[in-house]
Image (cartoon, rainbow, N blue to C red; front, side):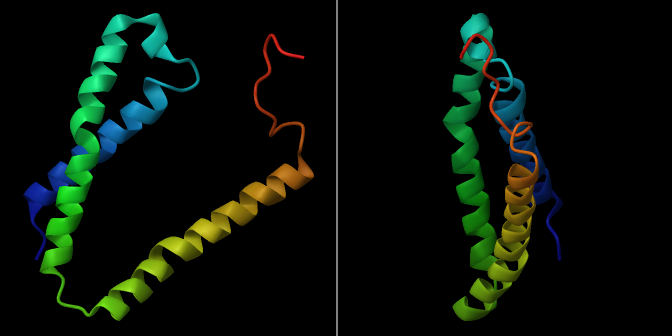
Length: 108
């Protein structure tokens, strides 16, 4: 049975990670341009990762499966898609090396 409160906390944490990694930092580091962005970033990063650890620990404690079964399911759910994605990225780097280069504005 799903707990809607846990789902809401996970969703909010995911949105905060997205805000932290993409809006505030990429492609322009807004923290250096606007002081309020630095304060917002400091606030978000002060509690965001602990939320993930607390929620993960809570959900792990509710699991009724043995450790080997949990490890196998995590490998199937996380490692295989990650390897597949990295294969696509590396293939793209091999086939399109110039388009995968970092932005070198102002550099040589």
